[in-house]
Image 1 (cartoon, rainbow, N blue to C red):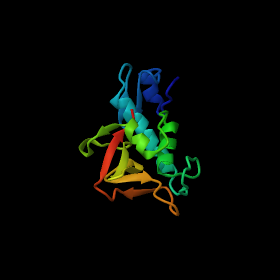
Image 2: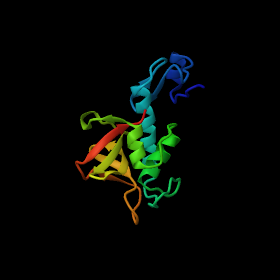
Image 3: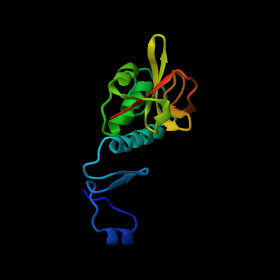
Length: 157
C-alpha cells in the first residue's frame, strides 16, 4: 500500500513511502514496530471524525447507525468504522476500555457517565471539555459540553 502525498516534490525527495513505513494522522506518527499509544491515538482520532460526521443524525433507542443512533450505538459504529470492535452497551464498553484519569484524557477517548446504579451514558471526547454523543429521544447526534463531574474516561486499544 502506498501513501499518496499531495506535494510531488516531497514525494520525489522522500521516495516511495509505504503505510508500514510512515503514516501521519492528526499529528500522530506510527512507525514500524511502534504500536500501542500511537496506534490507539490514530484509531481514536478516526473514530472521533466518524462520530462528528454523524452530526444531526436522529436519536433512536437501540440504533447502531448509519442513519440513527443511541449513545452506545454511536460509539460502537464510530470505532467499528475505525477498525475496533466494541460491545453494544455503554456499561459493557466501559468494562472493555482501559480507564484513564481526566488529567490524561485525549480526543477520541470515551466519556462514561455514572450514577449510583452504574454507567448510563457514553460519548466520544472531542477536547476542550466537549464530546460527541447521541443524547436522548427527540434529539440528534451533537457536540456538547460535558455537563457532569461524575464521568470516567476509557481508551479503546
